[in-house]
Length: 536
Image 1 (cartoon, rainbow, N blue to C red):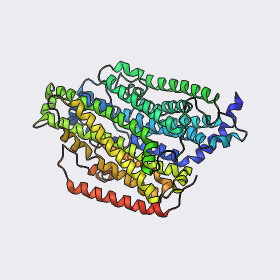
Image 2: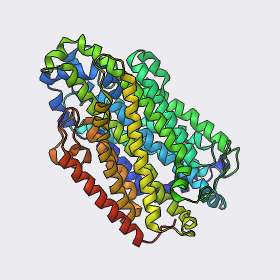
Image 3: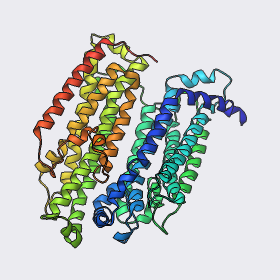
Image 4: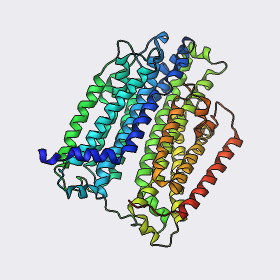
């Protein structure tokens, strides 16, 4: 038994040294993501605004679907702690889970796919040493992040967030999601020969559990205990007499079981093999036209995203009817909003919903464009350049694929929202929904232009685009609740997008963003044309 883990400690040291900048960015980013803006939430938690927030975030079923539930039954009890716990637990758990899935699969299945693990095993190193080293890194990193989140929240000395037990529960409930989903990815990675297939299935499962919690949160919260993703918030940190560490215990126990299953499966398969044989496809197999080839290679991923987003649109669109009933029977909401309460509440919900969905769609587009860099590093583009294709054409094909896939995804999501609320009382027209939602595509394409610039001039730092996407998500998710400094909010391109239908259309700003985006893409094409290809 000891032989299969031989020199795990040695590989652990090498792994930390190899990924020291990534791990440091991961650690600092997650601590900053969860702890930043706590002081600003004090404004939102004032007694004069607590009633408003209670009506909007606790009683409104649509907002519960976005942020998660809370057991608070009295507006006076909806203070800073419960506000922070409700709005931050789910989104923080999702970020932890996503980062863990990517890291675990990159350092196990992808390294095995690219031949690094075979090189390791040519030396006197145990069969499971690399996997166990990755697991140790993931577990230690999340323990460290949980500790630092607890300390950072406690250190701010903000009333309502000054209990060690509550801060520790929040930190552990969210960080253990990273451990849990990292082990889910590790197990799935044993089943497939390709890291791409393992990532697709891992994120598909994460998406399925996210969709399932929409129903349990609104109807049967007890059923949420059968959903691993719900364990991130069902402990209800900061809610007196409702706090529970059961979610943390279940996450750790389930993670250990998954780890044992993953090690068992890896120990009984050949290096580079999988239990499900994927379709053997070389990079240049298929049609000769470059764009069609890229569509052929990425088609399943894109179609999976489109289907998931359409279903998500249907689910959120169906909530418009619940919002109508919520407004009709809630005198407080009618008093809070001068004029047409239906228009005000639905309009604000549309802004929040479409902006968050747009960030998800941006993630799809960014991942597609990053494939250019991935294939370049692997040397697959050498096969492309053996044919009469210029570097600008290759660059343009990837950029066009990412833009088209993202814009269509935005439209498909909005179509789902529209169809779900057709026939309801006060249903919105197709044009209203499309105008309010498609405008966010301008911000998504701008993010792609920034990524194209990084790929062209500093390709080794292109992954930093994920930090900017995470920053946009933070500003979008909490920007309307937390009074962030104006200078900070202005760094997000989404802060310049007209918030239809709450705000008026500003064509001057939109045209300026589009022109700047085109300039960045052209500059990226010029830079990519003149730089050398990357090699591992």
